[in-house]
Length: 110
Image (cartoon, helix red, strand yellow):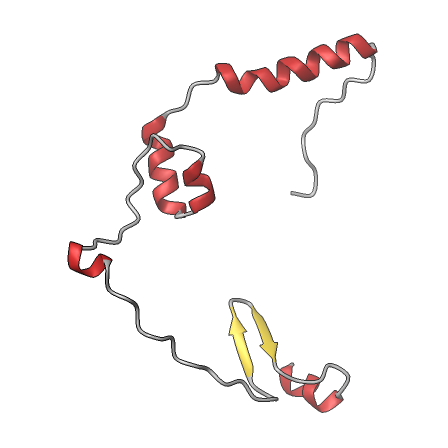
């Protein structure tokens, strides 16, 4: 957005500012959550930190483990070697292992 809608209140006393701040923070205590919608959103996001904010909601992470798999140690990850000149596509971005002061490196990246 190039512009964001805001409400500017600049004629409050110090006491009114403090009261507003307290009431604004209190809104979260009296708000009601639509837990079914929150569950859908959390399952889609798969964000552990957000999940911790809602400990009463059981999140389906899409991973089904049987009891035998739970104790299985995962295989050692494959080692990947990166050499100077290697270029990686990361979404819309490109990342190159190289010298940013070397014009040939920059040209090959572009």
